[in-house]
Image 1: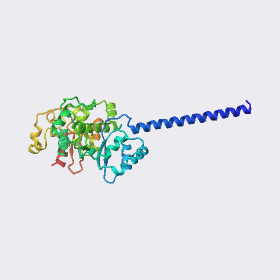
Image 2: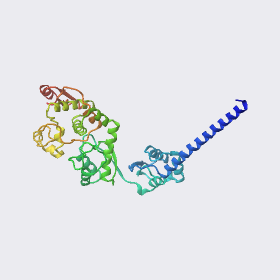
Image 3: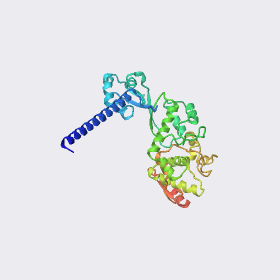
Image 4: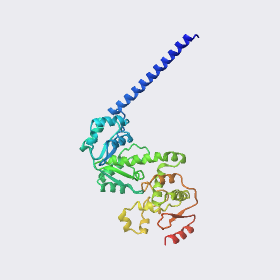
Length: 352
């Protein structure tokens, strides 16, 4: 090939490469332009999930923009900031907690934070580990969130979208699944939304901890695991002991020995009943929840356990222990025994 032809060929290649780069840049620019316009219009698919954004006194529009970005409500913070400036959002922000959702247009978002009437009063409630559904409902009602009758209706028959939950109408249906945590609720929030928030939190934490994978690998029954986890939650105070306490109950189940757990008996009683009843009277109650009287697991969970208790119920320690009792020294630590004789010695040493 001659020099002239080679030069012409090189020029053609250079022109082609330049054209390809230009086309690529235009295509990329067009893609981002379309994506930005979709973000502005709110054309993204909405999950209909309520997202709470709190504006406190002194907060800036910049902080708001970052909160919206972190929550997945908007994609392009620079574009949103420019439009917010045109809307004078900085000077028109209202203090309070507001509801937004993915799929909202920028205009809809601006209106939410500029309009006082969009503010809804909220309350933060902490639900400690081991509380039962009844106690959780009582705490919600005491704080002005919903009514007891409606909660009971919702819990009994509402479809929450999780196939691992017991069927509608099942006794104590959601016991074990209302995850203990700190929540912020609207005072006018529906009972369906409140319960769904507990269940969504449970599902999120279970997936993050790979609970369902651990279950599948263990071959254990999910609901039975939840029942045992609820007992472990009530019987333990130290996370490091939970798998060992789980081993005690599994060892008893394996030889058809009664679980004899106070947690299951206490589930039958409210606080007043516990104060008015003697230990002997409590242990004599004729109920499948009374594991001093009946063999095997109770019919349902007896509390709402944490992830650590669920993991312990899936993967217990391998021990030969059948008994445990508290050291009664304020640490929450237990002492374990293989035989009844050893256990009685421990009880005499630590509890009498």
